[in-house]
Amino acid sequence: MAYPTVDKPYGLIPINLIGGQVFAGATRKRRIASGYNTNIFFGDLVKLTTDGTIVLANETSTGPSTGFAGVFLGCNFINSSTKQLQFQQFYPANTTAPTGTFIEAIIADDPDTLFKVVVVSGTTVVTGVQYSAIGENADLVQNAGSTTTGNSAVAINATTGTARTKPIRIVDVVPDTSYISSGNVLFPEVIVKINAPSVDEDGVPSGGHMYNNPLGIA
Image (cartoon, rainbow, N blue to C red):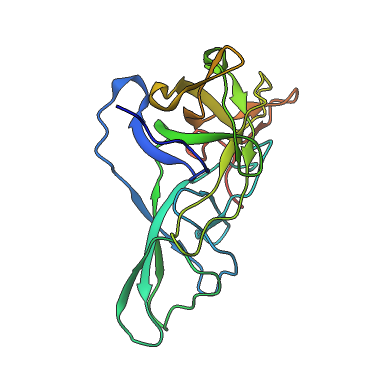
């Protein structure tokens, strides 16, 4: 069976939990502030703000100081024109909620969630990593998503390493879409999780998932 070529990134797609834990596709609802001025696409990372709402997390080489809140999986709101409940694959920038209503985002917020993601050499140029990348850390590549499909284009950079501040940990590779280049087997898709918070020499944590990061949001 021939598998399709991976030709572009698609964000972070939740697939499993670490350690063989049962994965039931559970999500949590978080609000987006009415009129928030940035698109958020299916598969984008998000973070919490001081008013309890979420915003796009556009960090690359480190995580937010107080941690990621999870990955965006769509939203719903009352359409201000039709007054009907509307479901969206992505949050359209500057959407306003009628008085007394809220914009609700659906996010995968379990800190043990594993995600499938595409490896790029830069922007949206798909490449791959070798099997030895398992256990290493990676930077995020923050490409803009598509308003046509509603999907993210976030990826991870193929230049992996051991720096504790990098926001993503590679847990496994996806063998189904691997290919051979210059005699090496490369994997354009990998399985990742949000990395643990890093701690500096003064003991101050940063990054990781907000549930694992003891810094409060204030």
